[in-house]
Image 1 (cartoon, helix red, strand yellow):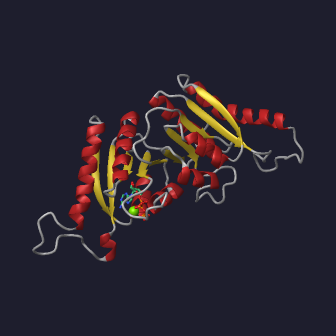
Image 2 (cartoon, rainbow, N blue to C red; image 1 turned 45 degrees about the horizontal axis):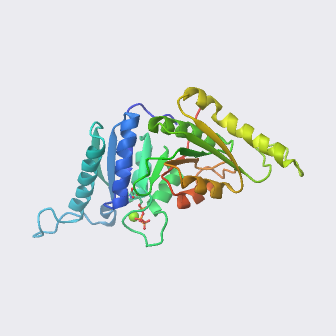
Image 3 (cartoon, rainbow, N blue to C red; image 1 turned 45 degrees about the vertical axis):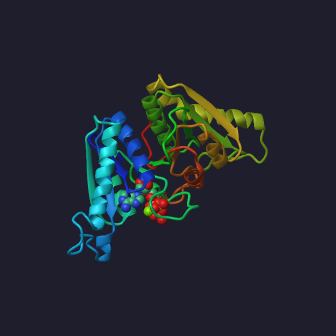
Length: 296
Ligand SMILES: Nc1ncnc2c1ncn2[C@@H]1O[C@H](COP(=O)(O)OP(=O)(O)OP(=O)(O)O)[C@@H](O)[C@H]1O
Ligand SMILES: [Mg+2]
């Protein structure tokens, strides 16, 4: 998918403080990308036959629809404080939240959501809207948790797959915007096939395989490193599971980037196990990339 030049950054709000954290991040992203920002609140009540307008005799400004409009007004004002130069629009859109945000992802350059919202239960790590949108969006999705740290590198997970190349491209772009280094992590435990028909040895030399991992990392970043010479890149091969390695790296990162699925893609509609684990457990904001990129 190609993203059109005027495509906005879209942020979903639900009146929660996490949603407002997402607005601030989205406003900064829009400023960096020189794109407009669109604030969306999905309003589910008409789907249930409830208009949400104030009942006769109720206070002016009461009712669910006015409340929904206030969420959007508050979010637009917050965006204006963070990035006054960014053109911002806001809308209450009738519909279920994930459906509305997925539809918005068709025309968006980036969708930004909080990791949680107003609902859910105390121990819930990721809200249902965020899980559905990161699983099926048609553009990159940035999941925000709290006010992100301003220090630390951008970290990208690399596995040699198409989507991880796209993730590397997104991560370079972000590292350049933010003027910070990029750390490319490739976790490995034993040789795995890179493509169909690849031969995987039954016994192998650990050091030689470690060198091979280094080659995958170098190849994954090579073209982008030429395009973004200002970004310092560190290659980090890690022996262990990818989910654990990336979660650990996220502790010191200001942004984590992964492809939606890796080499074990099943159908392409859902999140791979590593992306799923990192979505739930990363300590930094997480960008999930679903579209393959052309080579740089
Ligand atoms: N009605 C909505 N309209 C637009 N965006 C929404 C809406 N509801 C949630 N979001 C976005 O999704 C993020 C996560 O909210 P989500 O609803 O997934 O979690 P939750 O409310 O904690 O749990 P639950 O799955 O029980 O609703 C919010 O921070 C916000 O960015
Ligand atoms: Mg919710």
